[in-house]
Image (cartoon, rainbow, N blue to C red; front, side, top):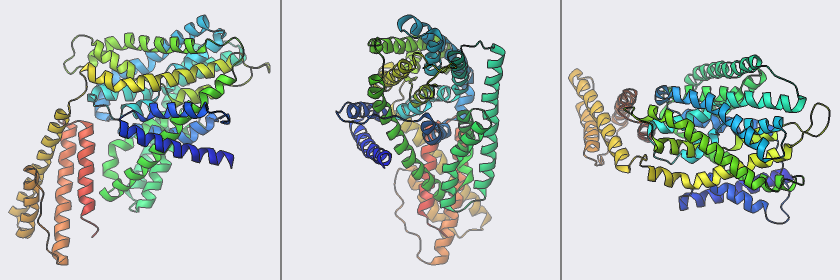
Length: 517
């Protein structure tokens, strides 16, 4: 009962803090971490210990799946080279740099320092998505940051397993075995994720019940994660691949009414999970600090140096890759490198990995340095979520990379005009066939023309049932044509993924407002 009460209290606290964050225009993850820290410092607050399995199985799959569904596969194709360089090369370089610093600055033995490096080597998709959701970054930059955080799991997980094996058993390892394990984790996870997406696609195409559709969508990330972990591959990779593939075809699997309900339910689930998990990060740190052994009082300075080193290395690594994010290529950009580096935050995944470090070595003795690894990991996570999170939006604004509201509005207006023209052309084709009553064609035509002139259609359809049904059918047909035109604009790179999602939601709302037949 005490655990249930703690969870309910966290939900209430996180909801209140997240509501304030929206009102004050502060990134919710940053404020939630600070709130967790404040609660943990209150005298009498019980120590909190979260099992890594709880985070890995309950929290991560839906959050990763939601982030993957938002990823633009079209834009991903344009940045796959820098994503590969970051997800492979930068993870290895970051692990080595952190391990070297930790061995030099802290009392950690080299094997345990390498464990710390493997834990902090990769960025966190949950934190990146939560912090970057409201930033008006160019499409390529946004996709790069998000895709890197989603696809670097296999690399960091292999490093982590190798590092833990060396630290616990003090045994050597072979690079050939590490490469083989990486291929198994990444390749096996990708295959399982693709298979889950294929099966779910066939099921959802045959499902018309909104409740069943919602249940299937909520269970999908857990199914992919459990199947992949059971096959000893990467559950995170499986969830990400399934999410990317389903996100690409989601608009074709269900109708507007089900999509709107599904998005509403998923938004609630994601909000609750993100709110609670970021509060837990803040709550964990004071508990871990109290368990530190003597002689580790310099951990705040050590964590600050490690965090600064991660950011500096990321800037230097990102600088030559920044040319791939410029529409016309050109010289490397410090502005792009700085923004991408500052957006690469750590979060709940490094914390879950650190918590899963074994308590004892192979000889039964306590694993040296484990409490300090936990504290340094959590401190770096808190630093990135609070310092980088609170300053990310101002940095993007000062860099000049943020898209102006006028740019987004102009793109959206042009897309709306294209959709209206597509609908009018379809009505003209129906008029030539003389297969639809002229008064219905005229009514829908006036509605589309009103949209072209930014006005509202005040005409009401006739109350007679046959006319109303015919009007609904015709309007749905036109919406289907407009939806096809919307995806044509997206596929030909005339609009961004953000605009596509917004206009698809508008079409769904319009179709749902027609009611059921």
